[in-house]
Length: 173
Image (tube, rainbow, N blue to C red; front, side, top):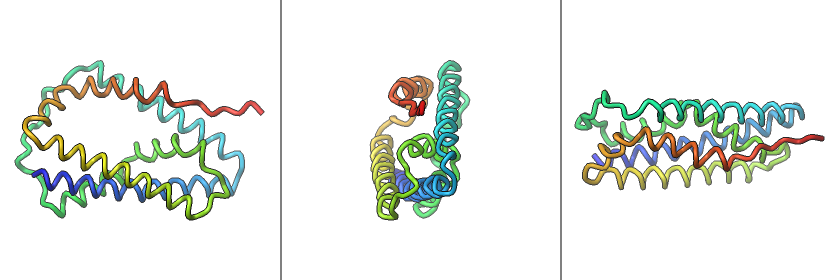
């Protein structure tokens, strides 16, 4: 079952990399079409991150969820694992929100295709390595069960990690 999760991580990394490239290309194209789009993207990304933060706080306040189906014996095949990981990345609107919030301050209308591809490859590498590492660690012993029991604490910690470090790029010009 661990190999299936690792393939999900590889699929997720590839999907995330494609998403990262597409998001950067879309932002650059929108900025090239209209200069005022940048402000809308920056504030939109900030609003989405605030909404995600509120969602994490609600989940953390709710405490542990003891009603989850913990039967992992019905996992997907190796190929299905890859497809699931890729699909999760491509179809997840939170990744779009993250890309919008993360890339909007840094992407410019005149970025070359090499830079955009580099952004996609960087996203793919970081995401893929992270998910494969997590899959490797969590498929040992009872790690998944312990993680599920502490999911509300992890949600709360994500707020503390991401929100204070997210600078607001506001131009008063």
